[in-house]
Image (cartoon, rainbow, N blue to C red; front, side, top):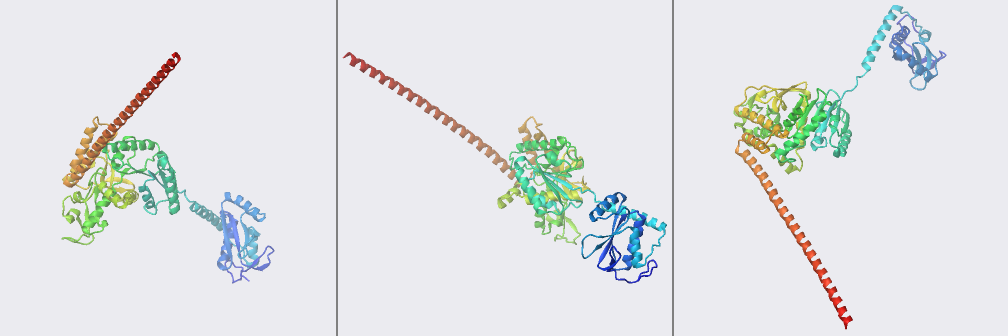
Length: 576
């Protein structure tokens, strides 16, 4: 038996539970207690059930707490399911743990209390004031738990990729997952022209097959405006380069058409805080053209990490250190003019030289290399390096390019006190305000700021000024604002000659220019030869036609002569 004093229980084997007629039955069971959170009777039943559970290890209770709005619908559905009739809170029933099946209806608070008094000699001794406090506490706890259980809608980070069927995109997309985007799932929007629809679907299928944990969705579209709508990051993979357009003038005109079309599609579709990221041979010019054609966003950045990566790798081998030991390589100016990744401000750790210190000790790259303007004579131009990779591998250097794009985006997301990228100029370092120019930058909360690094060396100042001038001329040529195209091209070439002061690079440019002129001359001669051949063919055809006409005329005359002779012979025979 059990002492009837509140809270005082003796041990009892609760495998003996009552059935509906209150007769004992040896079966493991649990009670289900359901009610309205602020209901006083539900509070009394809950306290009784808790006390029984604490003092009787085999006494199990499952609670269902509902609000007043939820109660009526839930009670109606539950009673309909079990065939019960019940009208108020709480509702108590018993379920067999090891047998399953429908539960056994017990009733409300009074029925539960009577069962406890019958089997456990328990009497309800809580006063109404305490029950009221407990009911209020139940309601507050329920509302708090309910609010905590409601998950806010998932808002993915949207990354739109323009030109998504390029091999660069294929190498880049896997890098975006399980990486810098930690605030939510990732939604990818792939955009390209209609002719590439099947390729986009194939890429979409592969992304789905990868089953990236943070993948929210991947969609495809042919519309730039549809891709940009709601995007947090708009990545423009510019396909134009010197291989697609060997003639610099035609490359600039093609860039104008490309970015003009993109700018028109972006109007009224781009979020004000969206980040526009450009990767391309004329990325800085592209950013300036977007602004020229009405894109008002100041969140435009150009990826320059490829040049920085290559410089870092070359230096690491030269100095016998890890690439991570080299810091502050900066890409200045107009991507990708020769040797714009410079080491004037760079430093190196862990270098063994005449002066060696702990890991925290750093020396300038100039001190470690001991050669002025080392990069000018030892680093290949982007065109030369790209061609060397393609000649050996048979593929474009998209692995390194994809990593450069990823590192740029990662910097925008996570921030950095020391980075390099192309961004809008406000006149820093004597550049033209509004130009998109490669600078040393810092990034905080997605905002790119140009870093002030003190007074620059004279040769670096000259490089910055020359490239700023070059960008302005390129923009004028692209927009068709120059009256004399040849003069513009000569001015453009002249600036390049000034930037490329070393004999090696000057010789490379001379060879390229000579090859271009030779190709034009060969094409001109070939055109002249084709024209001569065509004229000769037409003359031969004309001569053949005249000969055929003369032969036909002679044959007709001969036939007529033969007919006349035949007529004369007939007349002579008649006369005879």
